[in-house]
Image (cartoon, rainbow, N blue to C red; front, side, top):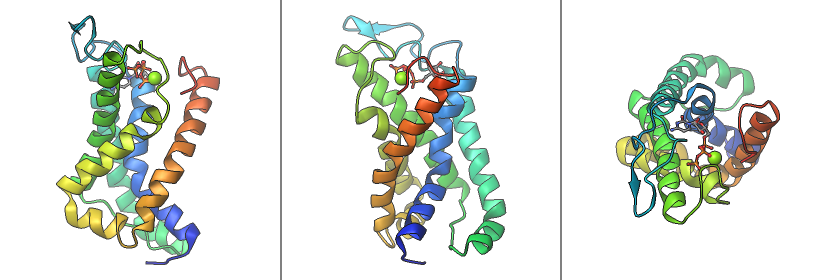
Length: 185
Ligand code: CTP
Ligand code: MG
């Protein structure tokens, strides 16, 4: 694998695309019955109306479909940019997509426990919850692939942690300006 900084950043973004897309698809396609069924715990909603079955299911499905699609175009993409991009085994597609949704859901659980209402900002957690859960679930569910893609060289996982918050801020600000999201975070 190439070691240039640009190559590392490109591999990091490519490898995380199946984890980046689910939350955005959930924003566009979500709604309906909340996962917590409206239930509260210790005076606050368990998760809140912002975490729905439809958003979670469609977001996860979109991330998995993207992983399959990216694997299909990988030879062409790698050849055209001259960077050795990874393909996604199904296990990695599932853990990246489901992990991203799970991280977002766990963050909502934490927000409600700390008294933050739906939509309230939770800096750092909002930008990294889905990354930590997607990487963690992938390390467990597709360990060989995880080690090869993110840890050799380990600068890839460092690039993910640095680049993702910036991409997250930009895409959410864009979704807000387009009227898709109620808050710019
Ligand atoms: N969404 C969804 N299901 C999910 C995640 C998101 O349906 N698992 C949809 C909801 O319509 C949600 C919107 O995407 O309102 C924005 O997502 P997000 O910012 O994560 O949720 P918030 O409404 O801000 O709620 P919270 O404070 O719990 O994060
Ligand atoms: Mg929010």
